[in-house]
Length: 110
Length: 113
Image (cartoon, rainbow over all chains, first blue to last red; front, side, top):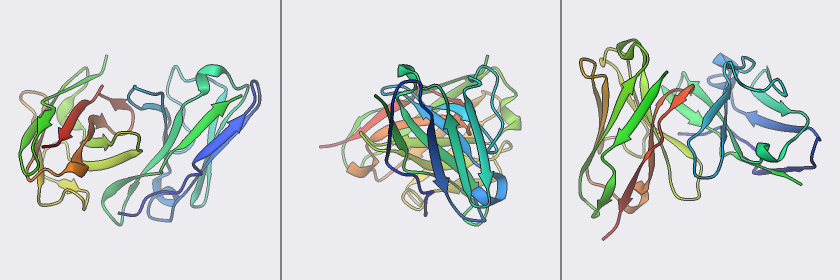
């Protein structure tokens, strides 16, 4: 099954802003939006945002998500060392009847 | 508190079989589709399979279709993944997930001779 497209890495300085991009098509990202997941090394994924712009309780207000057409984005402001992790987007593909994932973007906080 | 606890992973030879379990608590298990997602060492997340709340609908990734079977026992709040004809490329941490908001800690499956 074809997946979503994410850049492999992003590097930003402390207290800067990082933006993650996820590109799909009208059957997945453009249909019901994406979930954004954060994964620290050795830990399971953690939900940051669902249906593109809804933030679960307990998730920092430094995070915001949006979607335009078949492209979704996640922005983290005021980067902290603990934000260094892998970030994945995921969506249900109504044509494939399958969950699809992006390859993940590794965030390095300098 | 929602909890998903996987078990059943281990070392298995190529061509062998294994059954994973996922015990769920903290939510109405039968009301939700549940999925298996795996992650090979050093790689990204890969969806494996999903089963509807009632168990009547199942979905599989092409890479496991015909070899893996997902099932659930709603009376026991437990999800299963029966894995047959295992290959080296099936080596991964297998997560049980109520996509995408709740994830288990994962169980490691290693396929090697």
